[in-house]
Image (tube, rainbow, N blue to C red; front, side, top):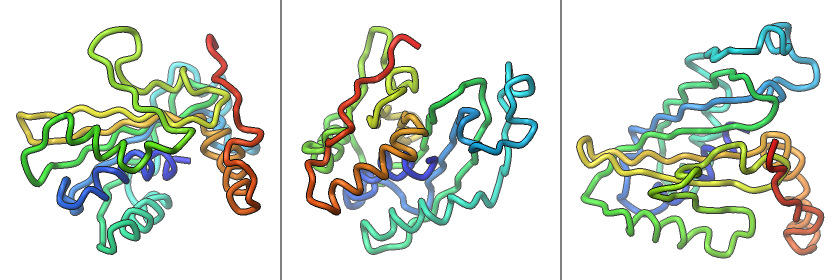
Amino acid sequence: MHATAAIISLAPPVVKAGLVDTERIVVDAKISSSGAGAHAPRLDLHPFRTYVIRPYEVVHHRHTAEIEQELSLLINKQVHVAFTPPHAVDLVRGILTTSHTWLTKSVQEPDVWKAIRAMYSNEPFIRIVKDRAGFQRYPDVKYVIGSNLVDIGFEIDTRLNRLVVLAAIDNLMKGASGQAVQAMNVALGFPETTALNQIPLYPV
């Protein structure tokens, strides 16, 4: 789940050769209670979860290896990721990842747009969310709940030469069952979107 959001959002700037420093990537994640599974520990029951922002497995999280593996395979070079692991938050479903990368050269906003579009222009479940005004300036789990969508956004920090990449998914869909159905569709030759055209459940 965490790995899905992190890999999909980081792949374009990592694949874009020389765009970011592959030795310095930090991923921060916020996860809902349903991410704990059907047999959640006591601290993930809602009486304990309400009004919570609780970090856990602060280092050496098991998903770190998966994120590094898949990003490394994309560029045939070792990528190192510091996964500042999940913060349990007061949500029933959804994951938001915020990834901090450091640019290796001067990059403008159109360069990042091009990198994302070059990789995902034909992907039916990926949306770029970046607006200078309005309610949804960046990805927000509220707008993907109940769907197989991945919302990706970014911002360039010119002061520190940093690229911040964000991704929002529904952990029960794109992070689990939706992703499985999508993979099955591809493997069996069905249209990739079969049984996955649900629009997000908004408002929730």
